Image (tube, rainbow, N blue to C red; front, side, top):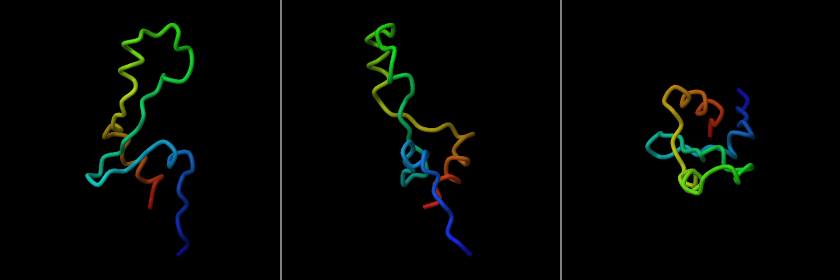
Length: 64
């Protein structure tokens, strides 16, 4: 049976942790930052986790 291919875009955006959770960076931090408040930009710095409803889909894209 052939190997599965890893989804290239997903491997750049997600990390699967030992606990099984999927870590992601937060969105809305790339452009048009002048209209966003400093507090909002500061809060977007940290990473967060993928929702449980999407976890299975992301893990399927990252088989290894």
